[in-house]
Image (cartoon, rainbow, N blue to C red; front, side, top):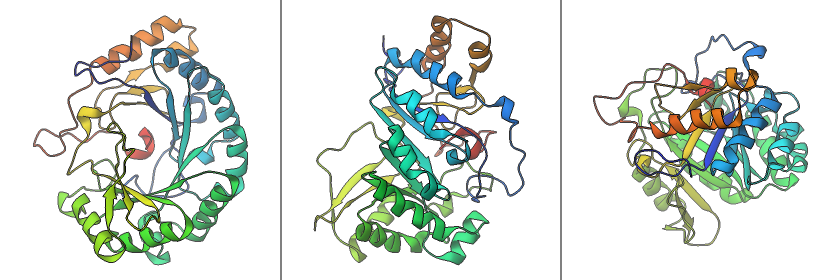
Length: 327
């Protein structure tokens, strides 16, 4: 039986956080001062691989490794090797901030990783420092180009669009992606970080599209659009690339969601905004059977709510911030 919830959504996409640590402090993701988990709290690579081995027969065939910043986890290519060797897994990707990517891109590709997303909200050094509270823009760009050289195709760029902060970065980023053969992903600002979220700061999907069409190039929907994917996808009419818009606030895609999350400390979350978690770490470390762990996963997904309710008075912000959940 596939992994179904009460709304008959089939779940095949697992996002695995390998660490809550990060070498940036993005304002929309985490606080400036943070106490990270003890390393003993994190799942080992072998525990992560066993979890994937258990859920793959249940229909999970797509994996994305996240953080925190996943490239801070030592020997990450080894985990990639373990996961790509599991029967049934057809797609393994990774999301990174790019700071350490130049040094690791080739090893990750050689290990079997084929899809990579790099978070980059601006090409302006001052604004990069303002958003991330750190230096490193040049290293990110070098990392992006190193990933492309290593063989990743396409390299996707994730940019959070915040009114009054990064809305003016849309056109420069779109042009940068077109110039280097990259694929842009613009993401609406969501209430999941450490800062005080204000709906008025959301730079909406339709505004992003209008900006690109008026200042870059007209767009049309792609022919191979996956309705379960979080991004609405478009291609430029001149043939020079494509973009995606993740409109979690203005156009929620909850009713088509196919994703489940495993946090770095072994909690199963059926939604990014979930208020409840299922702890599988004691089961993995205590020798529980695959059937028992699968039962816990099924139960967690079965209880998945209809949607995150960001646009209602019922919305409750999760206690975990993004770095402790996994992007």
